[in-house]
Length: 223
Image (tube, rainbow, N blue to C red; front, side, top):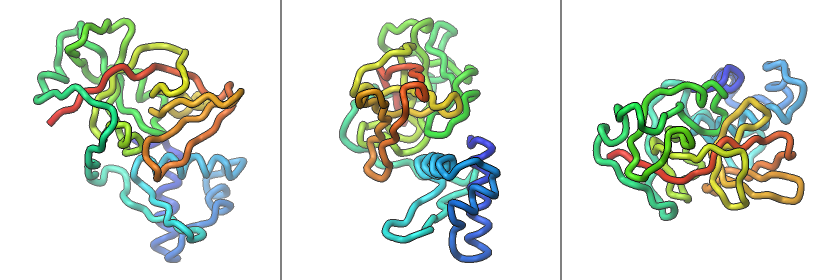
């Protein structure tokens, strides 16, 4: 699920690539989406790239490639070393658990709308003793955390908290608009949200731009 602005930008870039063979400039994107600054375009492109819809070609100006459009099929990434998940072998271990299970509140990736983490889409019966009152779960979309062992389709369990330490993997809400799963780094008064994939840049924000929603405590994977 993309935000309306993300989808609008993706389709605009795709149309221009088909028409002209070259992606539009940031200024053209800004005007097409009626945004006040190019920084908004940069954030949208980063979110689309992280979620696998766009790819920036290195060492080339205005070089964007549309990888897929909404509702296109995706390919799951290969597992890498890092965070060790708890493995579930069938859907009954994950979805359709009793009401006392951990609520699954949607899907998480850079650019997911706030609404995607505000309504329950299922429940999870974890092997650990975790209270539903203090924990929630999200399904992972995108490959920005693959080197932490977190893959597309995994379900992450998070402890509800508004506080986290440097090095924690967190769900962070950016500018009250965008939720993302990243590693937190505190740099003086700034907050860095760090991907676990060298393809994606670390994003830096002021303290008032980021609200912590939860800290990762466990992970489930279906085969």
